[in-house]
Length: 175
Image (cartoon, one colour):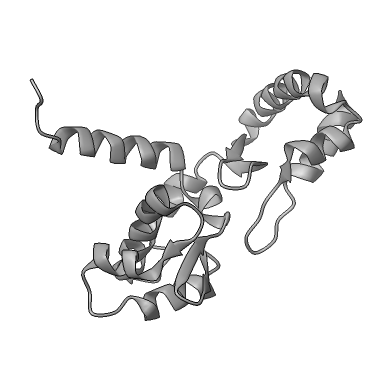
Protein backbone atom coordinates (compact mmCIF):
# COMPACT_ATOMS: atom_id res chain seq x y z
CA UNK A 1 0.00 0.00 0.00
CA UNK A 2 2.89 2.36 0.75
CA UNK A 3 4.25 2.08 -2.80
CA UNK A 4 0.76 2.71 -4.15
CA UNK A 5 0.49 5.79 -1.94
CA UNK A 6 3.82 7.04 -3.30
CA UNK A 7 2.57 6.58 -6.86
CA UNK A 8 -0.73 8.30 -6.01
CA UNK A 9 1.06 11.22 -4.34
CA UNK A 10 3.28 11.68 -7.38
CA UNK A 11 0.39 11.50 -9.87
CA UNK A 12 -2.10 13.57 -7.88
CA UNK A 13 0.32 16.41 -7.14
CA UNK A 14 1.56 16.97 -10.71
CA UNK A 15 0.66 20.43 -12.02
CA UNK A 16 0.88 22.68 -15.05
CA UNK A 17 -0.68 26.08 -15.75
CA UNK A 18 -4.15 24.64 -16.36
CA UNK A 19 -4.05 21.07 -15.14
CA UNK A 20 -3.36 19.24 -11.90
CA UNK A 21 -3.23 15.59 -10.97
CA UNK A 22 -4.01 12.65 -13.21
CA UNK A 23 -6.90 11.11 -15.05
CA UNK A 24 -8.50 7.88 -13.91
CA UNK A 25 -6.88 6.07 -16.85
CA UNK A 26 -3.41 7.36 -15.96
CA UNK A 27 -3.84 6.24 -12.36
CA UNK A 28 -5.11 2.80 -13.38
CA UNK A 29 -2.15 2.37 -15.75
CA UNK A 30 0.38 3.45 -13.11
CA UNK A 31 -1.09 1.04 -10.56
CA UNK A 32 -1.29 -1.74 -13.19
CA UNK A 33 -5.01 -2.18 -12.71
CA UNK A 34 -7.39 -3.28 -15.49
CA UNK A 35 -9.70 -0.46 -16.59
CA UNK A 36 -13.07 -2.21 -16.15
CA UNK A 37 -12.38 -4.08 -12.93
CA UNK A 38 -10.03 -1.46 -11.52
CA UNK A 39 -12.48 1.45 -11.26
CA UNK A 40 -14.18 0.19 -8.09
CA UNK A 41 -10.84 -0.76 -6.56
CA UNK A 42 -9.39 2.62 -7.52
CA UNK A 43 -12.25 4.40 -5.75
CA UNK A 44 -11.42 2.46 -2.58
CA UNK A 45 -7.73 3.33 -2.89
CA UNK A 46 -8.49 7.01 -3.42
CA UNK A 47 -10.75 7.03 -0.36
CA UNK A 48 -8.03 5.33 1.71
CA UNK A 49 -5.45 7.80 0.38
CA UNK A 50 -7.76 10.69 1.25
CA UNK A 51 -8.10 9.37 4.82
CA UNK A 52 -4.30 9.07 4.98
CA UNK A 53 -3.85 12.71 3.83
CA UNK A 54 -6.50 14.33 6.06
CA UNK A 55 -4.24 14.69 9.14
CA UNK A 56 -1.84 16.63 6.90
CA UNK A 57 -4.60 19.10 5.96
CA UNK A 58 -4.97 17.71 2.44
CA UNK A 59 -7.60 15.72 0.63
CA UNK A 60 -8.28 14.10 -2.73
CA UNK A 61 -10.61 16.00 -5.05
CA UNK A 62 -11.90 15.47 -8.54
CA UNK A 63 -12.12 18.14 -11.22
CA UNK A 64 -15.32 17.47 -13.20
CA UNK A 65 -14.15 19.64 -16.11
CA UNK A 66 -11.30 17.34 -17.12
CA UNK A 67 -11.94 14.22 -15.00
CA UNK A 68 -8.64 14.58 -13.15
CA UNK A 69 -8.05 13.56 -9.55
CA UNK A 70 -5.72 15.81 -7.54
CA UNK A 71 -4.52 16.56 -4.02
CA UNK A 72 -5.60 19.88 -2.55
CA UNK A 73 -5.11 21.54 0.78
CA UNK A 74 -8.39 21.55 2.68
CA UNK A 75 -8.39 25.34 2.96
CA UNK A 76 -7.37 26.12 -0.66
CA UNK A 77 -10.95 26.86 -1.72
CA UNK A 78 -11.62 28.89 1.43
CA UNK A 79 -8.39 30.84 0.96
CA UNK A 80 -9.34 31.58 -2.63
CA UNK A 81 -12.66 33.00 -1.48
CA UNK A 82 -10.88 35.23 1.04
CA UNK A 83 -8.51 36.75 -1.49
CA UNK A 84 -9.52 37.97 -4.89
CA UNK A 85 -7.50 36.01 -7.47
CA UNK A 86 -8.38 38.74 -9.97
CA UNK A 87 -6.29 41.42 -8.29
CA UNK A 88 -9.17 43.57 -7.04
CA UNK A 89 -11.05 43.39 -10.35
CA UNK A 90 -14.52 42.03 -9.54
CA UNK A 91 -15.54 42.55 -13.18
CA UNK A 92 -13.28 39.60 -14.09
CA UNK A 93 -15.05 37.39 -11.57
CA UNK A 94 -18.41 38.54 -12.98
CA UNK A 95 -17.30 37.80 -16.55
CA UNK A 96 -15.98 34.39 -15.51
CA UNK A 97 -19.27 33.57 -13.79
CA UNK A 98 -21.18 34.68 -16.91
CA UNK A 99 -18.96 32.38 -18.96
CA UNK A 100 -19.66 29.45 -16.62
CA UNK A 101 -23.40 30.12 -16.85
CA UNK A 102 -23.17 30.20 -20.67
CA UNK A 103 -21.31 26.88 -20.58
CA UNK A 104 -24.51 25.31 -19.17
CA UNK A 105 -26.39 26.32 -22.29
CA UNK A 106 -23.76 26.12 -25.03
CA UNK A 107 -21.35 23.47 -23.80
CA UNK A 108 -17.66 23.74 -24.58
CA UNK A 109 -17.86 26.39 -27.31
CA UNK A 110 -19.41 29.51 -25.79
CA UNK A 111 -20.31 32.42 -28.06
CA UNK A 112 -18.70 35.64 -26.81
CA UNK A 113 -21.96 37.41 -27.68
CA UNK A 114 -23.82 35.27 -25.11
CA UNK A 115 -21.35 36.30 -22.41
CA UNK A 116 -21.79 39.91 -23.49
CA UNK A 117 -25.60 39.60 -23.17
CA UNK A 118 -25.38 38.30 -19.61
CA UNK A 119 -22.85 40.92 -18.53
CA UNK A 120 -24.80 43.75 -20.21
CA UNK A 121 -21.63 45.77 -20.69
CA UNK A 122 -20.40 47.66 -23.76
CA UNK A 123 -17.56 45.19 -24.17
CA UNK A 124 -16.32 42.05 -22.44
CA UNK A 125 -13.47 41.32 -24.85
CA UNK A 126 -10.81 42.88 -22.61
CA UNK A 127 -12.06 40.87 -19.62
CA UNK A 128 -12.00 37.69 -21.72
CA UNK A 129 -8.45 38.39 -22.89
CA UNK A 130 -7.35 38.92 -19.29
CA UNK A 131 -9.09 35.70 -18.20
CA UNK A 132 -7.27 33.93 -21.02
CA UNK A 133 -3.97 35.38 -19.81
CA UNK A 134 -4.81 33.98 -16.35
CA UNK A 135 -5.47 30.56 -18.00
CA UNK A 136 -9.17 30.43 -17.03
CA UNK A 137 -10.39 30.25 -20.61
CA UNK A 138 -9.31 30.02 -24.23
CA UNK A 139 -10.50 32.37 -26.94
CA UNK A 140 -10.90 31.21 -30.53
CA UNK A 141 -12.43 33.77 -32.84
CA UNK A 142 -15.89 34.61 -31.53
CA UNK A 143 -16.05 31.72 -29.04
CA UNK A 144 -14.61 31.04 -25.62
CA UNK A 145 -14.04 27.77 -23.80
CA UNK A 146 -13.32 27.16 -20.14
CA UNK A 147 -10.04 25.53 -19.13
CA UNK A 148 -9.82 22.88 -16.41
CA UNK A 149 -8.13 25.42 -14.10
CA UNK A 150 -11.54 26.55 -12.85
CA UNK A 151 -12.33 23.07 -11.55
CA UNK A 152 -9.20 23.15 -9.41
CA UNK A 153 -9.84 26.54 -7.89
CA UNK A 154 -13.62 26.53 -7.50
CA UNK A 155 -15.82 24.00 -5.81
CA UNK A 156 -17.99 23.55 -8.90
CA UNK A 157 -20.47 21.26 -7.18
CA UNK A 158 -21.14 23.89 -4.49
CA UNK A 159 -21.35 26.60 -7.17
CA UNK A 160 -23.87 24.63 -9.24
CA UNK A 161 -25.92 23.78 -6.14
CA UNK A 162 -25.93 27.47 -5.17
CA UNK A 163 -27.05 28.52 -8.65
CA UNK A 164 -29.78 25.85 -8.66
CA UNK A 165 -31.01 26.90 -5.21
CA UNK A 166 -31.05 30.55 -6.25
CA UNK A 167 -32.97 29.73 -9.42
CA UNK A 168 -35.46 27.67 -7.39
CA UNK A 169 -36.00 30.62 -5.01
CA UNK A 170 -36.70 32.95 -7.90
CA UNK A 171 -38.83 30.53 -9.93
CA UNK A 172 -42.56 31.26 -9.96
CA UNK A 173 -44.66 28.93 -7.86
CA UNK A 174 -46.53 26.62 -10.25
CA UNK A 175 -49.13 25.43 -7.76
